[in-house]
Length: 194
Picture (tube, rainbow, N blue to C red):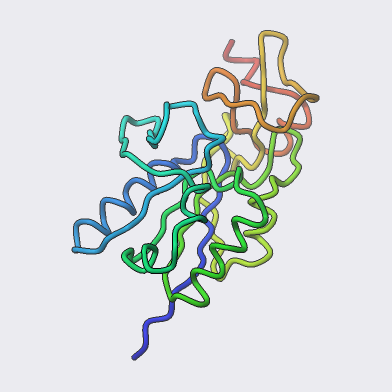
């Protein structure tokens, strides 16, 4: 049977372990003798240059997606799969390139990222992946109320931030995953427990 590559998009709200999943996929490919290429868009500088780090402490070196799209075909064919973290920061053109890698070179591409920003608008990379990916799967996390978190709330000392640039890098100090109701209400936590 002929192996058919796929373009896969795993998305989730902040704190759903997307980077940890990307790092585990990278490890698992190495574990079975496969050669993965781990990358991220240059925009993601939170953890430093050329490294992917998860909140639970896993990390691995990576290359930039901007470099990968410049690799010649013979170099890309050395890899069994391409794993992209923070795929929401990719451009539409970069996602189309990754789709071409799948379609014409039969190399699986696994992308991890946010679906929407702090205003619940799609990121360009995520929008394109939602349009063209062969498989789309949510990595779930919970709001403080216990419901599924789907919104990435940006906050500061004054509460939820509703306006600003789409991209502002940050972690638990700037973002929290909320259900849609508590995002709309601007409730960062259970007021009865404060």
